[in-house]
Image (cartoon, rainbow, N blue to C red; front, side, top):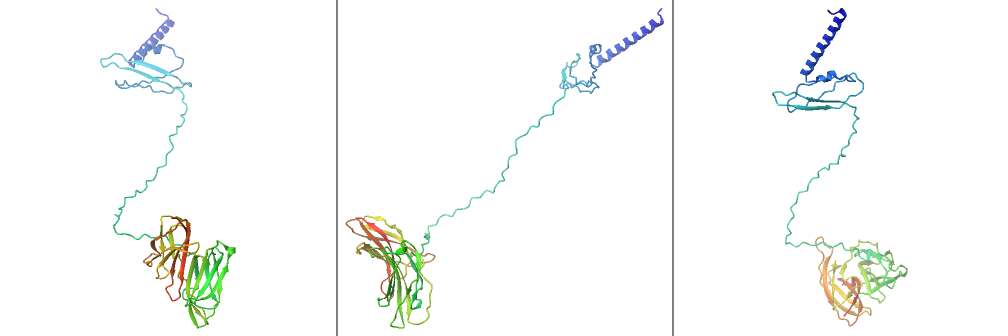
Length: 361
């Protein structure tokens, strides 16, 4: 009925149909449309299907490496057939293409963390008491003029070697005097320092003397005056003069300024008929403190005398306040003189300082 050749062709066709039917059946069972097998493609593709997801899952297609060199973009859309269970539609897409290495992103630079410091705890502030406290006064300055050598009651023979810190008066002179026990002037020198006006320096004069007795107590005085011959400053020390013998020198006792005036200041203009003087004092002896207002003619305009105490405790000076009434008819320049008189047999002033003021009615 068929020739052998036709039989062979028939059998081959029948085998192809059977194989195709079986392939279609297998693909339908796995959820792949049969049209895929019947549609030619340019490149072979291998698709791997995962088990059916649950209703809340999304199907993902895994990329299976193939032997084909170029990358392939595959978009697959799968619709599951209706079943008694809830209908599930899933769309899966996968893009296979080379990607560039990501550029690193730098975050903010780390900031420096401050180390916590120890917090100070509040301290208890003592409540001020009603007990008055002594207010320390500023350290008084060194004496404007002073005798460094000899010290008090040094035993000296002629000539007396003097060392003193001075500043010439308005007339340019420094006066050095030696006064005996009876008030007589044993010797006097007027040292000319007009070439050193307004300067402050040490002097080392030699003071010769002659005695009629073996020894005598005397006062060594160094002073300066203004152009009206009013005293500006005076300092002194008592010594023992010897006709013969070796000198014995003691150390000075007065180094700081004995009388410090805080108010009024030098050159102040005073009005109202009363001069108020505020200051500090360290008395050189136990005699009263004398305040005098002397005009340019040497006349005493007014004065006051106060008893003052010696310093105590850590105090070097004791504060004072004095009111000096005055009466002038016109503006009058005066010198305020603060001094103390001698407490020994030798009369006269032992220390003196002064400032210039102008009095108004």
